Each structure stands twice: as C-alpha cells, then as structure tokens.
Length: 163
Image (cartoon, rainbow, N blue to C red):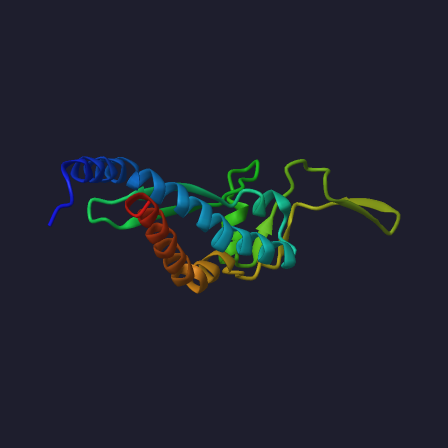
C-alpha cells in the first residue's frame, strides 16, 4: 500500500537522484578506493624496493569507466621513459635481460690504464630483476577493493532512500 501521493512524488525524486548520480558516485568512490587500497601499497612497496621516485611517482589511476555490462573497469598507469624512448617503469616491473649499453658520447666512458687513456665503446650490464609489484598488489587487494566499494555503495544508496 502506498502511503500518499506526496510519498510517491518524494520517492520518484529520490529515484531520479539515484539514477543521475549513481555512475558519478561509483567512478569517484572507485578512484578514491583504488588510490587507498592499490596505488598507496604499490608506491610503498616500490619505495621499499629502492625503485626511483621518478617511477613510483608516476603510478596513477588513469581512468575508471562503467562498461555496457555494468562492470567497472580501472586503468592504472605507470610509465617513465628514458631519453632514448625506453620505458624504465616497465623494465622495473617486468625485469630485463642482460644487455649491451653503448655511450651516447664516445668519450663518456673512459679510464686510465698503464698511463694511457682508454675509451669504452660500451659494455654488457646485468639485467634488472622482475619486481612484479603492480601485478601482485592488484591481485592481492582486488577483492578487498570490491568488498569496500560494495559497502560504500550500499551506504550511499541507503542515504538516498532511507533519509
């Protein structure tokens, strides 16, 4: 039984508010929770692993969208490019093989041996180990994120319909 026409009008306004604000609430709250539950732990672990601030300072939530299927899609972005066009952030995450480094300036790598200056044409360096920090933290914290988002959404919805 419907209590009154005024109640119906009030409920219709609440429903309209819910429909108009739902996607914005989900995107905003998801971004907030991803920063707290995913990005902050990634940054902390990168710092603890000795990763450069130029890399962990570039870990960001790039986009949050709601798909046609109702799923929430989150794009976490991290890149830091060298002058030569090499993605250093990706190399720290996935690791690298041993590789050859050649100096940009022919006289950049030099040493004196036997009283004579020698110049290096380059040398082989040991690759970086795979840290896999971003992937591990997302995998570890994704269900906590989902639970917290569901909890916050329920609170928000209740605040609209049960005031």
